[in-house]
Length: 287
Image: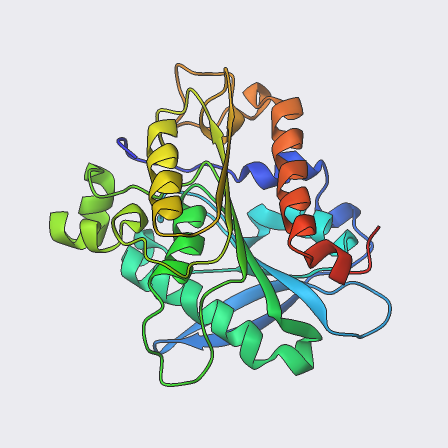
């Protein structure tokens, strides 16, 4: 990523074409502890039998500085209808005096919390996916790559990841350097620089003309994943930019009317198909 990320509404709302106001389920809020902070989790649980279900943990975009968990309501509804328990994380933001290190800690602790509470939440702890958009995709990837010791036996590594317009190469971003505290700190949190063997399967969904999170960075990330023996799939959509916008001249400022709904919908379906191939959707009882 080469430019400052400003307030960007998650494309997930546009993808699913609905919000929880139109859903049959009502989101519930729970909290978990993350390095001394209390972090809210906005949850949807499918109706029906209480058998252990797959879960998807959702991370909104917004340049690590803006946003809220409700931005992911559309995608939460989509996955809840497929039988997933959905967990949208209200991670700490830089505008409130935090750093991306805090947000990454929150992402890791969110995955651990879902596994720790799996019995109560009705979740299969071996089928916990993460899905993030832009800066949220950075947090999802970081939960997998930077699985630091937490004092308990629960891993922060998701079993699969879907990353939309992902900020996975942040070491050269002046904005990220400013938020994280400098060049060395930015490099320490840049997923592309820390890929190792044994990472979970990942799907990257990327606009070819994105000048916020570059297609070339996504290609480099996937190539390094494969070189380390990991599974990484990349779908690049021509003619669209960040979050699949057609407004290529101004990609930092949200222009919701310019989002290509067909491309965004195709990317959403690609994410579902990816998890279906890995056995998540079948585990949810969906066709």
